[in-house]
Image (cartoon, rainbow, N blue to C red; front, side, top):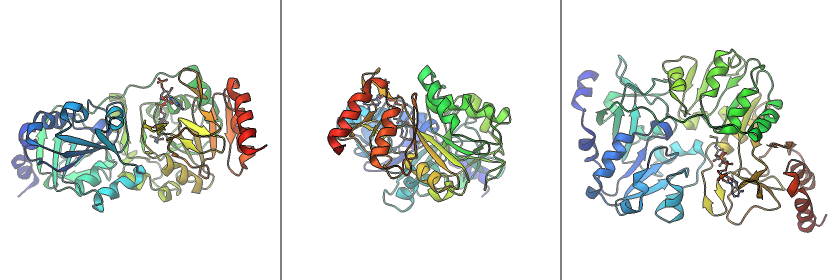
Length: 431
Ligand code: COA
């Protein structure tokens, strides 16, 4: 039977498709902007048919109704990265959090550590050979689908057809639900004066020919504004957003000096607006891979001059950084932070940057602290950290002793907290 016939036979409505979910199933949901919202809505509407369905998801951008208290007998959310819709559910004990490096998530599924019963995903329409693209979310979504007992996919013409190792054949999809859904849009963040200052310092650490990983948010976006005069930059990252498109069009990002995937931008998911999604559609300069490839520190390190830029919530005077919790409260997740910091450390000429505002809570708290808060999670160990950057400058921590680190970090703390930090350092470390 040809793939066209298979496709037709597997067409279903969303309501029909979600009836194949059974109580006790573990469901993996397509990541971030590739979330299949029509399927999730149909699943929640059919909730009376289920008990204890486990929903495994990472960055959830939609309403995540399965997290609501009234849905808790039917669904239990297992979060791989807390977000706006799951933080409260995790805190209130209605959802679980599973720590993992982003690079390691596919093997949780493929090695059956967390066996997957159902994958719900969003795909592009099939090409002439019957292959659909995972579009904006290849990451763990493709490995989950490949190791899942049942694959239910929303197929929409609005999902960009991204290239690379981004495809699944129609014959491997059990239920096909045609929709007119668009991938979720993430508007560019507002960039403050502080973000601009931090972006300027980070750009000082970036040289012509570097290969970049830029996280998400105002700081990475503000850095892009300072890179217009650089030459032959490369991209090997987990994700990028709209700002990168302008630098490609201006000829700043060429990827010509990359050691492998030369002249190609490598990523595993995208979050942005239609501008980004149009750019990545059928674009041979963009290659998508599952996250166990893009985020594997050994792969990252194959690029010379790899520079990773990520952020943190709190950092102690020895250099260990918490980027994912506020005390015991899970705020986000490890994501690919440690993957890229370790990859950059092994790259010839590599550098990693943790860039963050010097204060939080409208200037009332210093993010540079004598010791992490009780319950705060160490995302980046002090043995892994390299550069820390705030709006007050750059601290190069690699190879520095604990007192030297404290001095460098106090110098980039907000001036209003420096005296107190010095006193606390003397008290704790007897110096
Ligand atoms: N104590 C109390 N509150 C704090 C705090 C602290 N130490 N640090 C931050 N906050 C508050 C902030 O004030 C802010 O609240 P507000 O919006 O009411 O002002 C809120 O927490 C979020 O902080 P902010 O630094 O603005 O968050 P962000 O959106 O820039 O995200 C991280 C920063 C670190 C959470 C995010 O980069 C992350 O999750 N990193 C880990 C994963 C990662 O690096 N992945 C790889 C790249 S995709």
